[in-house]
Length: 236
Figure (spheres, one colour):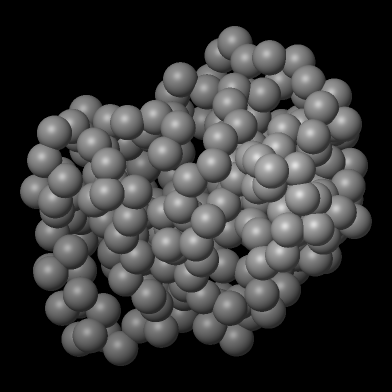
């Protein structure tokens, strides 16, 4: 499979935010979202077999060589790009990681079919909103592939995006389908320097008020890594 990078950091999003995680970023994406912060993963990459990826994950989680320690309460996130573009390779990778004792998160747009993803994998699915530049790409049949430990994320830039997400949550009764619904303010693609909410396209305080007013069963989710490190930093 084609890999852009494998690195260890803190999980920055989802209900797992703040936890140690090894990220396996696959190369390639078929969408071009307006505020994408990982365009560097669209092209290039290094070919790596499953065994080599697994060995790198083990090394990062347990640099001392204690493999038992590596898989205790340790997360691995498969991300991209869009990892499901490499379904033939990435599904066996997820199966191997599960067998090795890791907890697996899959970050995906939901544009590709998710039926082949192992049930143990925690899917974090990004439903694209109107101003994402990739609206209406979510495959609605993927709702059937979601389980009670999965999460749905909506990245929002304005009121129209919020209203789309709010109505989508209600129409599909998402609070009964998944573990968490995440409403996340979009960051400017060129964000750099200051580590604060000034880079958000939608004021988090305003979004919080809308959620409260409409009693939406969603969690306000901020990209933690953008506040710890420079928002433009890679490999974090």
